[in-house]
Length: 88
Image (cartoon, rainbow, N blue to C red; front, side):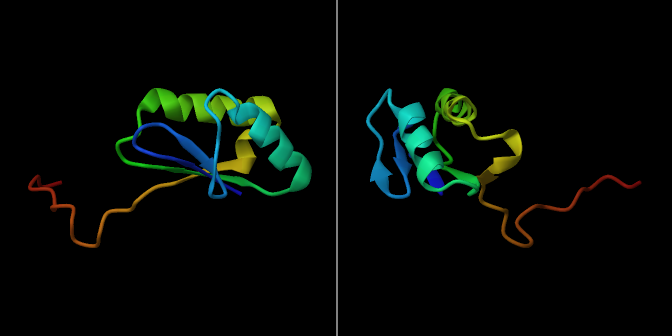
């Protein structure tokens, strides 16, 4: 399952908008329906950090283990990180 957090902190679970304040309940129901699946947490780059922490805590409280939660992050494009100018 995928829990998406927008830049305003609003959540969607597999494309379904989550009513604010009920994320834990949505995750409990999701875990019952889809036992054994991991939870991908996809976060907008501008999402407030507090919203990310709340979502992670809600997932733990709903019954997901730390090993069942993973984050989807944008990786830098190849060559987009400038090489270090320092010599070893």
